[in-house]
Image (cartoon, rainbow, N blue to C red; front, side, top):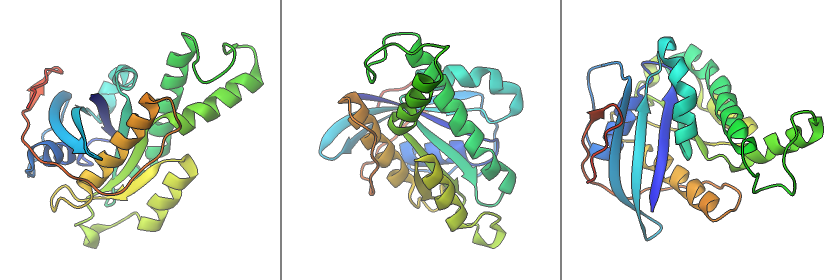
Length: 225
């Protein structure tokens, strides 16, 4: 089963480092701004073999025009901020709302499988109900990266947890450098996507397993492991 995961967040928060740590079990020391890189990894979650396609995206403002397409292509979203940078944390809510809005627009363009009748652009109540449904079923995990840099922390764990709870998302503080909670975040996302594929409401989970290697390619060319 294929799972399409999109990694979003501001530039410099460690999206690539998390992705490479997860797919290749290595830490990227240098910062090289990403435009669009795709990785594939064979994994096992809850005794079920999975093929993960992880899209690592640009965080720079000049690439925001591409963001909607990245969101449309994704099934689950890892939204990353750095605990050492409050501005990246303050951007998280807007990114979550953007994901929900794009997915809502996408669902309204065809038959809506979670409601009894099509959504009308002129009806306020159906839109509100649909947005609520979209929030519940869009798999999103918020990750506060760079947990190892506790001496430079600007965002507390409680703040991150509280924001994620208010947005209805799972939350992890992670470190790509020490490989702390990296697999946990991805595993939670895979579990939510699996529930969606079965037509249920999203739910998260703890723990992670797996290993393997990956390869980095530009322009969304993926390498199957």
